[in-house]
Image (tube, rainbow, N blue to C red):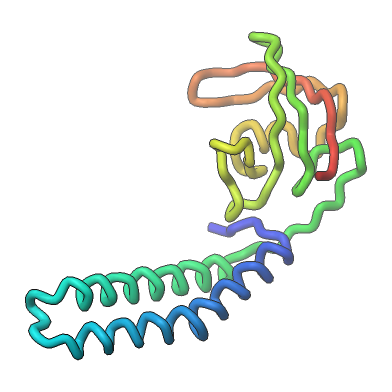
Length: 155
């Protein structure tokens, strides 16, 4: 499986990896050493917490490195009035006449609670590269519905 990412998203992940390896890893190592120096490790909560934090940090580094390794770099080549990565889209759901705004983002940046969807989501896939005024059919787990693209902006 590929992760569709922009070069900007990859650069952001590389910065996070660098921070975690250089700054955070050293800080956590110091916390482990300090907790170990307190004595009896079997009942030392600080030692266990520091080791757990070290594991979480290393796991995040591995995750980010894998995301970069398996990434398929995409560039937004859409016109100004077309739905594309990094654009904010106003959608009218014709079944209930509601309008919502969504930002189209890469797979790493998705946040459905804040209306950030990727082009791999059912709605994102349906509207990707469509223009203002287009009506599209969206296939979801709840069935099919129709959405109209009202506005596309770069925010």
